Length: 322
Ligand SMILES: [Zn+2]
Image 1 (cartoon, rainbow, N blue to C red):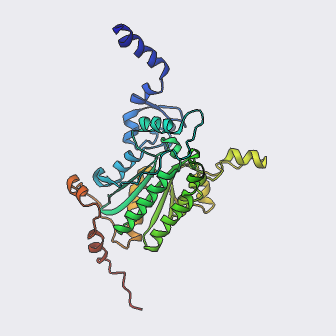
Image 2: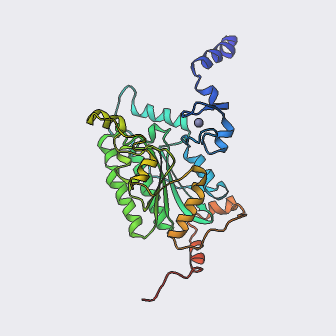
């Protein structure tokens, strides 16, 4: 029996789970098809080294690259009712959830974190497309509300990275209710006078595009990201017409006034720092050697209350007498 479990079974498994084997060492670029060394790709923030195609990146990896010294604390999200509709397609909804959790190592389709970028305190939320297509369910709604509340509490901007196939059908109408809920969360930020920046990544579609992903003060997209409500295939079938080249892609939308910027992933951090500091009326970011914040200290003070005030006084632009 040992021979079967130690030798035959791994061989059979390796035949059937070919997807897993190259993932450890090699990644195939879905755009140009070149085989890329896995470590090289992750060091390059999951951007293809030969054609610059932006592949999906997990929220945790994105945050590690975004925050100063890769240090951030996660913001807790209230747990919604599990499977309220007892939904079942080919599989039961809780089974699908467990499979997604196993595959991604994450609890749900959105991760909220707090930390500093370029020594500027921010709250970030990122959607995980590999977790059930990043679908917007009650948890994602709760996550956005938790992120907005934390941003208001700590008087810091909110940066949201969207990636979703739309609403989570397993939660039916309850997932659609997240559209008005998240809209109210965004309103909270606007009332508090805090910037809300949306980074649209490939793909951002459906109800997500119809709510919080399109309500930012600034909309930045990653190159060639598909951003739409209904996909190009559905539109083509409905209107029976050929759509123009690059339709609903980031560059096309920038040309047609739907976006403010299209930014390469490697420049995203610097750009976000510049935008956030401008909108918060802080001085320009310090370029050069910033020592990484002490992880223990950074985790101990999640709110970071005094940091923005000291720097805000420098430009002395604020209280202009009438
Ligand atoms: Zn490529």
